Each structure stands twice: as C-alpha cells, then as structure tokens.
Amino acid sequence: MRLYADLGAERLFTATKEQQKIVVEIKVFNSSSFITELEKAVGQYSIYRTFIQRIHPDRKIYLAIANDIYLDFFQRPTIQEIILDHKINLLVFDQNLEEIIQWIN
Image (cartoon, rainbow, N blue to C red):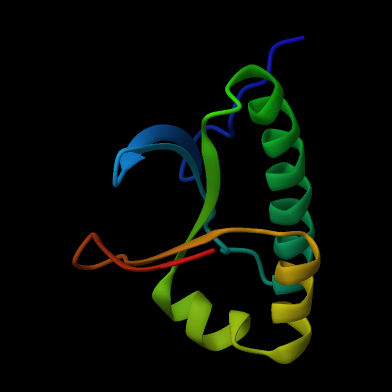
C-alpha cells in the first residue's frame, strides 16, 4: 500500500528540527465547516502517524496550521481536548511572513 499526501494547498514533507527528523502535514482550513476540516485533519494525521511510526520510527509528525486558524479555533477548550486526546503535535506558522511562530508538543 502506498500512502500519498494531499495534492494542492496541503502537503506532507520531511525536515529536521533541532537534530530531530520530522514530518509536517500542512493543513489549510478553507472549507465553510471548520469541524469537517478538523475531522479530516485528525484522521489524516492519525493515519500518517501510524505509517510513519512503522516506516520511520525516528521521525516525529506535526500538523502545520496558520496562526489565524490557531487563534480563532485551536484556542477553544474543546478543540484543545481533541488535540491532546489524539496526541497531535502542532506547528503554527504565519502565512504572510512564511515563518514558524511556535511548536506545540
């Protein structure tokens, strides 16, 4: 079975963070339904994490989201509970500056 990341605005890539190999899934929440996009993101993240742990156990996976999405939605207690329950690592970035704002493990 081959696993491919989404094409288009969302993508999966590998990199290095402080000597640690990482995999980053960039998620663009551009649907009118945040919950639908969150369901897809959590599901994809879980699938990618399962395969990556088996194939590259030395890599850590991050879900990359734009800072405005993080501030508008991911600060909500219910969303934070979902992120914690599913053990999702976040990479929050500024879309305009193309800079990482914070890493959340």
